[in-house]
Amino acid sequence: MKVVIPKLLTWYRENHRELPWRETSNPYYIWISEMILQQTRVEQGLPYYYRFLDKFPQITDLANASEQEVLEIWQGLGYYARARNMHKTAKYVVEFCCGEFPKTYDGLLKLKGIGPYTAAAIASFAFKQHVPAVDGNVKRVAARFFGLSENIESPAFFKAVFALLGDYIPSESPDIFNQATMELGATVCTPSSPKCSNCPLAEMCVARATHRTDSIPVRIKKTKITRRILNFCVFESSGMYLVTQRPSEGIWGGLYEFVNFDSTSDSNDKFPQEECPFPTANAEIELMHEAAHKLSHQHIRARFWLIRMNTKPREIENLGKWVEFDELKSFPLHKLMRNFVSL
Image (cartoon, rainbow, N blue to C red; front, top):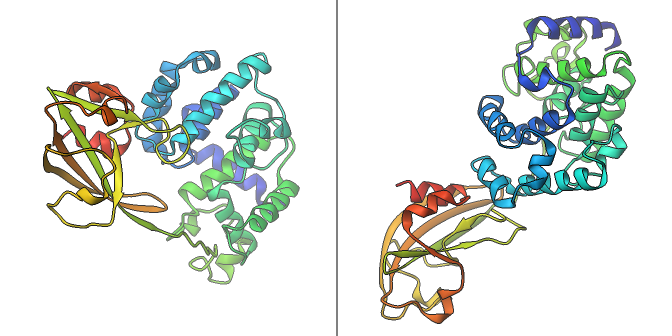
């Protein structure tokens, strides 16, 4: 690979996409971009990047914000634990690091929510540290270039690629090398139908030489899918609706929703009264909306039941806040809730 590194760097300088976080060495900006892009394509992430920095231009602004403000800006990206970790990290950096990010890979790894890839990205892009940034695109490029047949999802594969690229990364331009390898994976060495004729590494690529670009990288990933029937109780009394905030940990942490419960009944029109933990005696109940929602580990069938009550039972009155329906749009909501209140 050392032989073709100059070609790789030249290819990057001539072909890379112009993105705002590539025009800066500010570790805060780079950190924000990396956290947003971990599960989001560039086209989707760009508006969030600009919106986030417009709201929180400095790390002190993020540290001093409320969790609700952070979740509102993050709304729609999913993986809300990431937003909460960013908030905690900002507070930590401001309070214990004088508002400055650690300048080393090992120091960055100690921050909450920053793993090996993000630490390497910040260290190399902001501080020119000699450390490879190994994301999914880079793993794919390395797997094909070196002809690696190990499971790309395994920790052992990551360690192997980290060590290999550590021997190849040029000391004078680790930031450009990392950006180039990532860009190559994103635009040329794509998961399917890689554009090998446009690749600066093609002449030494093992997968191409052995006609295995379709079978490399090897991916063995088993995700157990849980199927749920989730019933949202849209409690209404005198024109006010009950909304509650989820615990900070776990799925949709810190976001707002109607109180809800799981059920086994799959009836389309019958409210699962026997499984409902909330008092609904003498209430008018009707099915308002039904939706399917897929997460990486859960497939949810959601049902929204309007439950009209003349009086608020003591058991539910203090479960959350009673607000007008239009007010719900001002709360940070997960996708199922956002879609419902926008109907």
